[in-house]
Length: 125
Ligand code: AMP
Image (cartoon, rainbow, N blue to C red):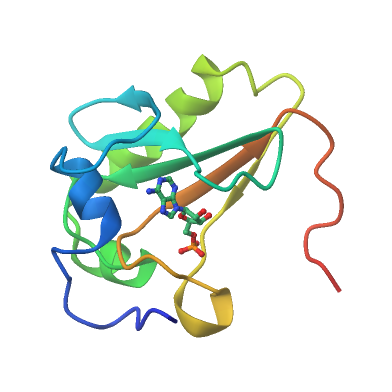
């Protein structure tokens, strides 16, 4: 179901459960601000999700309400994940879906990190 990016945070969403360790994930990175794990339904050779540890529904929520420290920590974590997975030299793609038009399905902010080979056109037409 489409996410309302302005809705209150639902602590029972699947990524909140992953953060609490209630359901497993294939973890690739963790620091004080972020957790990263392989997408369960990969759309590229490398498809990693990076999520902030704070309770933010969407990029809209995060950019408006997160502290400067949380924002800096999350952005640095995304860069660390790309570097640690050897994606920088050949390149990669970041994607953040927001709300219905963006196709957001999980109401906890996440950035998709794609790599491992040429990723084709930016958007399917
Ligand atoms: P979005 O459409 O941007 O909300 O993307 C949600 C992503 O979460 C999709 O690519 C799903 O395959 C992925 N996903 C859903 N549940 C899990 C899970 N338990 N572990 C890893 N990835 C998941």
